[in-house]
Image (cartoon, rainbow, N blue to C red; front, side, top):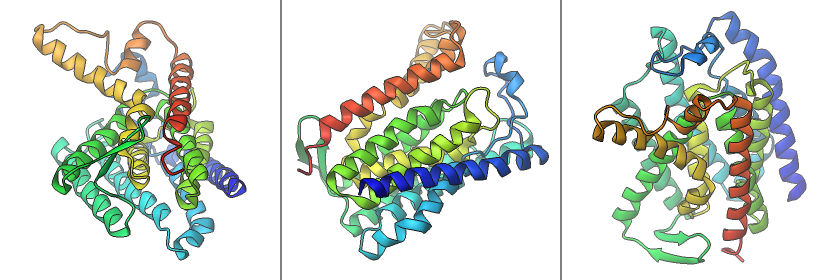
Length: 329
């Protein structure tokens, strides 16, 4: 099992790296560069024109592992690799439409909020229904660290699941604000999933987690500061989909609270900023939101933010592993 996961990690990393060596010059040649928001940090203006949609790199890496090794688990009846990847791919397609609209309009405004929300909710309903049919998801809400579960009515669980999925996907998207940040924060999350799946003998889920981690390492070769390419909404929505779909495949969505605390804090900082601004008629709680931009305003370099956020995510991943590993033992 361990060798299988190592192979998935290395294979996805190499596939993502090879893809990147072709994708970056191709996108640069086609002038498919990022447009910087007018209300965003002014010091990011120098990033304008950097190729986007780089999420294709780690998506390709995972797809390679799916084809090369995931079929074996599917033939044995475990389709979770396919389910997680397929769901994440739907979200990547939503992100691709958004990226494409931005490039076509030559501004950082793609699909409308209503359009994105409707597509995300439809995909989330599909995931929940599919996992129920496959028998991988129950209405028992598992509480991490306490090893107890509460049974919820099906309708209430569905509402809860939609909130968690849409919230998680957009939280990961918000975290993608500086070079390498979303990939760095998600890397320990993916490794945690792979480790838990290995401990429980869930080969299919473990392979996806390992492939996701490897794909992100390959992507970071090009995305770490100074970034040669951005993942775009194509990549960040895929990552959000992957993070929450894996949690639901393991039948413990609440694991996203400790494991995804960095995403949650980034989103909360945005909410706090907006609410405080309205309540105080123009005052700001943070120098800029989300929180990584606040730290930039405080003089932190992008590399420092990356190491601190990734380090916090890694610590949370280790804590989460030991907090839930006893569930299936």
